[in-house]
Length: 420
Image 1: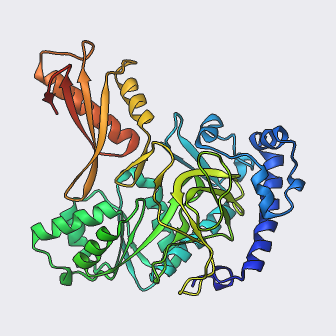
Image 2 (image 1 turned 90 degrees about the horizontal axis):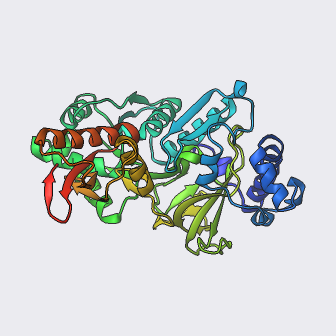
Image 3 (image 1 turned 45 degrees about the horizontal axis):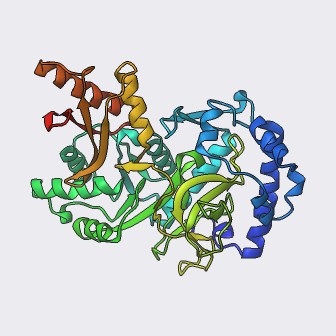
């Protein structure tokens, strides 16, 4: 363990620590963030009214829509002069997500990432190679910095094709691979094409992030690469990776409950559910200074298991992520909301929005967004080059704004495919 005094803390001691940190967070949010002051006032509450952890249920939720409405700095709890890092990502609402960090936040986040790597069996003796898509740029930077903080040797993510990545992996003797499940699966395909045997690599661990890992896919990757897999859970709104992590026992994600308080609620009623029940994960930050979040609705369906783990950790464990309560979906680990697709098309096409539909497709392990667009009168052209240009522009626009690969198919009204 990286921090056994917290990761194996007795339940009673942890609850006292959580309450102390919760009261400090609520006081700071109430005093420094107008949004939370309004939230408290609308419910006739003051921070002093939250006397135990159960009282947290008296407070309203924070949603992604709230983050969008307070863009860019409305939820910051410190002056901008105290912010040392501003992270922006497309998010899943109309406006980008903006999160701020103080120097204290960055130190906390580095320790959480060190916990994650330690639990995965990574040490300062390892060579860690990162293969993550551009759409996960924030996670890529964070995970690299965490490995460097641990003292491991880092091969940063680069814009190389997969054959070159495998060459680097073999020649540099990479021992730990950090990537997404879909890319790991695709590497098996590339290795087969190159006749590259797993024995030629020095890999012993893969750390797979940003998307669920079904058991069958886990077994395929572990067998194909001859290694053990570790996983983690995180969301960009709550410090990204490092929120929860797997261990050697592979019995769920150990949730960093000394710094974040988890709840499971009924997504329909908002009522708290008992331990073990499946529902929506709600998170309250306990230690972050710049960007406190109170009862943030993650949208992820999971459960909480409070039983101590065989690894010795007592931190509550998240069960598998079973799905979403909203329409958000993942393309290679990058979260997308259908409304974003419509907004991007409308922006690109000068305010015109044709009929469209989408699905996520997988080819050789890699996921892409398959987008069908109906060519109506406003888009029609009898020149093939003009239609090809439209496809190209849409692909580039989605790559630039969401960091995902899109396959565009143009369809004629009432008939079949025009081109792609």
